[in-house]
Length: 218
Image (cartoon, rainbow, N blue to C red):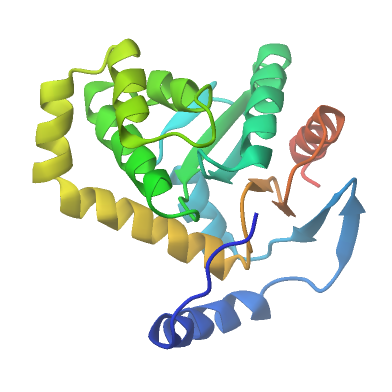
């Protein structure tokens, strides 16, 4: 799904950073199923993505291969990829997944991301992350809160964290948005796997293939 357009001021800021990144991105394009993979040659950005301590991790925290996923809880293709990622993690215990909330649909998507991030301070990010993907796409704030409560989130603490740590939450979301746009992702889902950028949904077989290539350093 497509991300909303940036305003003129934001476009100018991102354009400068994007030009620096683009200088380091190889021009070769390799087709992978319905998506496209492009080589990343930006070691610093790649390291930031893989080691960002503000991003939750699913799968094996010490895994030898990392998948970075940019997603929106209301994105239909993200919902498909959630199932495929869970299947991949079940069959390959060497994979860790860095989760990047990128609520490009705005409104309720932003609230869902904020609740997920705030739940992380209770150690409940992964349960609420899974629960939100089971809700109907046309979720509302009440449904999100019910899902959080059912996932074991302390709602009083959640509301305190949403209010008192709003700046931290906004900083996390802003950093993710900057990273996604510097990588020229146009929407969700989007992935970084090994040295490849993957915009869009891919099959489970393609995911496994990309992980195998990453293990081989390709």
